[in-house]
Amino acid sequence: VQLVQSGAELRNPGASVKVSCKTSGYTFTDYYIDWVRQAPGQGLEWMGRIHPEDGETLYAQESQDRVTFTADTSISTVYVELSSLRSEDTAVYYCARNERVGSYNYWGQGTQVTVSS
Image (cartoon, rainbow, N blue to C red; front, side, top):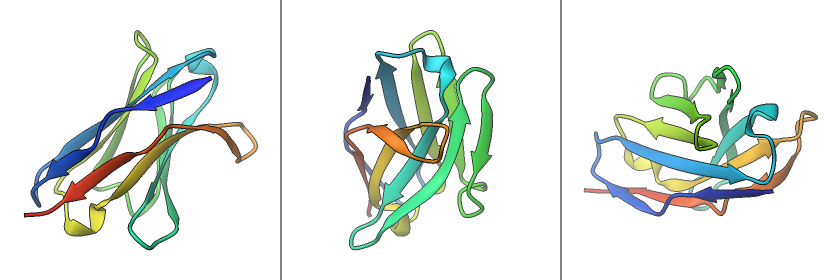
């Protein structure tokens, strides 16, 4: 099982960014993919999840206004898009396969998103 994320991004405040997480080694539609981020000096923050089979999503309350999860089953890839970026969105963003019991055995390598003018 592998989750491979897209590379680092630098954006101005107010812009948008889209991070990808390409999966392989298992049946893509069998598991939720969760998104988690870690800001500098902070703990992990759960952002939400998507089920690739039907696109069902669940967003953390803090994420629901500016965050969108999507999935492309043709290429076994999920995406997180953040809009109206703020400096507080500067963080490393991770995708992780949800093992159905609230744990994560497989993680992407992380994508640094930096929001700065």
